[in-house]
Image (tube, rainbow over all chains, first blue to last red; front, side, top):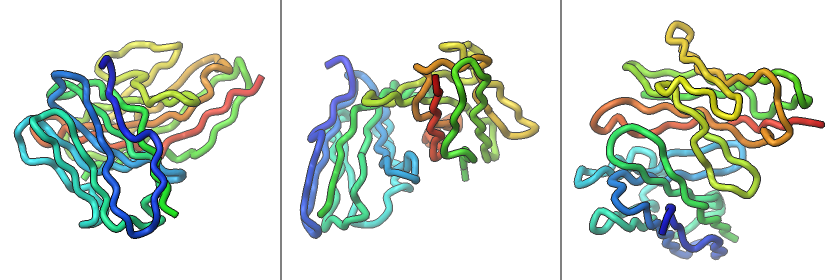
Length: 113
Length: 111
């Protein structure tokens, strides 16, 4: 596709369940980012992948959060034992390696009941 | 550590009035600064970056290293400028390409 694709666009889950959010970056983009967007908190950095380097996981809020990127392309963000405070829009973005514009997906809206 | 501060959560102006969205940053090296915008029901997109020194949609932003600021300005606001604006900072090189965002300013331009 032409842009960053995320799925699902909406996810409602019960507290305690695990969820997986998927990101398909723009073809050829070696850098991939995950952010969390919530009211009053803006965009919180979660994790950053760059090529084959070890990811920068410094923004993951707890060990319930993890992410992987297979084959340098698709990425999955996993939240285990979801809590109500995990409710937010999770944004994925990609760019070619190095500095420059980030291209964002439309986000996955997660609601934890 | 890198930090971006946008002191105003909300900013409301009338059409035709000047607008300034404030952004201050903290970074020990030489940063790259950006403004991103999110219009209603659209995805987040780049508005401008300081190294381009461009004017996009009438907006400009000058990097002031002495004041560690990167304020976004437009002399005459339009209703279509109503959106959420995020200031962002990136380091240069290696793992420093993590992009840190401020909490955003919601701009409303009234008719």
